[in-house]
Length: 370
Image (cartoon, rainbow, N blue to C red; front, side, top):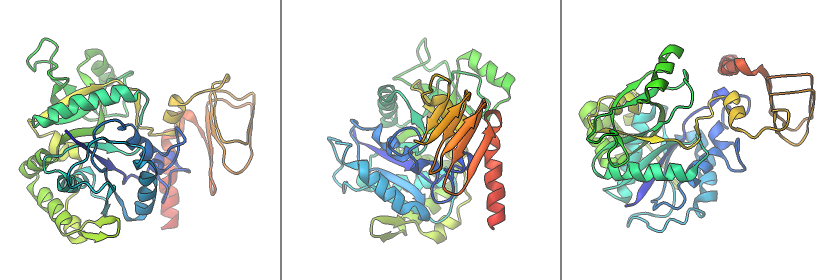
């Protein structure tokens, strides 16, 4: 079986302003290693039998995608290629943002050009996974279920009662004492981001997992289910691909067809409605790096519990802070629990507990520039 990665790279990442902004959202930045996040997304599949990746992005990021994926593609060393695989990444350009379901549908059409029976793995381009082996084991279990016609999502085993994530519930009666068959549970339902009391209940029950936004299924099965539950979206997504224009290394989806789509997420469009849903539970040090405080949590800390990035940072009596320097010297004295991020054109100083409001700052700046 050959697995074709579909990497979704259309996000703006404004919660990581001022670094993630405009033409340089977080997926194209080296936030957790020397590699950018989109490069890490592909590299953690290394060793699996892969076809050429399909990357869905906006017009403004096409050259960055081509460069960054091209830099690591030769490292993948996939032993098997589909007959129609060119060896190059397939870069789909979305004319406008329409959420995840249409982007995935068009990418499935591209995957089926390589292999009509393609099993695809849909990955956001901005996640962190610490335990790559555990992730790959889960991918193999998911792919085995996908070959049987199931639509599989990864449920992240929760480590605390998070209120910032949606949840999935795995049914406990799927034919065995544990409820797990072939590494997967029956998908019972999706749940929106809960209040703290509900999140505590979910954690205690052991039946709920965080919604990862990662999926494995046959491209043809996904399109069949989309046709069943949202036939207009399916038809327009397929039309946008079939009428796409090839521009050197890029495939420009047809703007007229794509523009008619009423955008929706894969969860709402298909996964909440399908009877073919399965959940593979994943415990691999996952994080969606949704804020600077999240990046602090997963980063290595010094003896003062600080995370220091950048060569020219001086700290005195400073603790439990995330400090990321740029071209200027940053010096701190007597500070605790702060986030300080310097970029070429802006400086962020925020209490770690208020860091979710960074998105509001980005919105204010955007409104000023319009």
